[in-house]
Amino acid sequence: MAEQRSQNEWSRRRFVQRAAIGWASVHAVGLVPSARAQASEKPKLDFPLFDLHVHPSTRLSIARAGEIAKTRKMLFGMVEHVGPRYRIKTNEDLKQYIDAVRKAGMVVGLQPTFPNWRKRFDKDLLKQVDYILMDALEIPNPDGSRWLIWRSDTKVDDKEAFMGRYLDFYLQIIATEDIDVLAATAYLPPCLAKDYDQLWNEKRMRTLINAAVKNKVALEITQHFQRPTARFVRMAKAAGAKFTFGTNSRTEQGVGTIPYCLKLAHECGLTAKDIWLPKFRPPRIQPRNT
Image 1 (cartoon, one colour):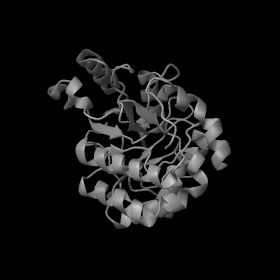
Image 2 (cartoon, helix red, strand yellow):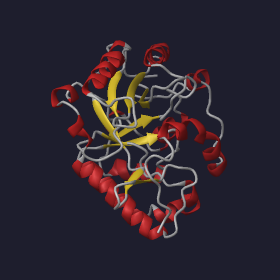
Image 3 (cartoon, one colour):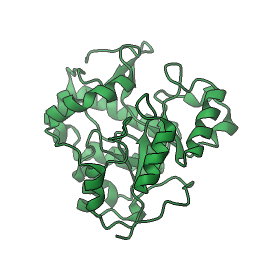
Image 4 (cartoon, one colour):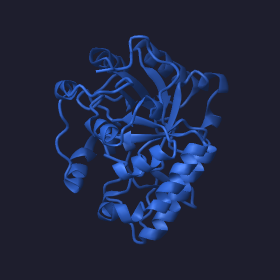
């Protein structure tokens, strides 16, 4: 089977900081337009422009992200990983994070990376979080470690066996983790990119989409990975799925820059009824009718 990776080899944070160049070379993705160029497109949307997958980092403080959101008149959702490897380890850590994100005028999200994570935190405190976003990029191994399929050097020996295991983990997360948003929807490691349409065939797409609709989980259109495809989004829209946009960015230049998300919104005819947003919304964020 595929090469197994322990959970401590690389951090997800380091990956996101370094992967952009490698990912672009594999997928021939062009440069992301500037915020000014993006704004000049003036898309005709009946929902606010938003980015619900913004991460704090050494290059982007929570306060600075809030300033950028205000300047661009966008809704930003801040998400942070939780658990022993990350900043939010305790209830006090979580409380400080919630207070800081609220003060910055953004909605509060969390991005857990392992099952049953809620047991670590107080239930009443978790109720103050606006949404939970989770992906399927760290597949549990029988020995308790995790296979980090987001790594650019991930290798897969048996493609069909991988897809079976991967889809099963998707379904487990959707059915058991009480999440609001499925991040990195329909991602595949770079080593499988050339077989994307074959591996994410109609049956697998429909299985994932139906599970999301049944459990009222929104599907993220991810700027960083430029996934899922228009084919997937059209099928999901027809099935009644809801969508969110996310950059998965940790830099001032990346947050809120969503040309791929807007491209799919136009191609697939997404409107406000197809979009999921957290219930809490800063009052300055209004729908765009331009």
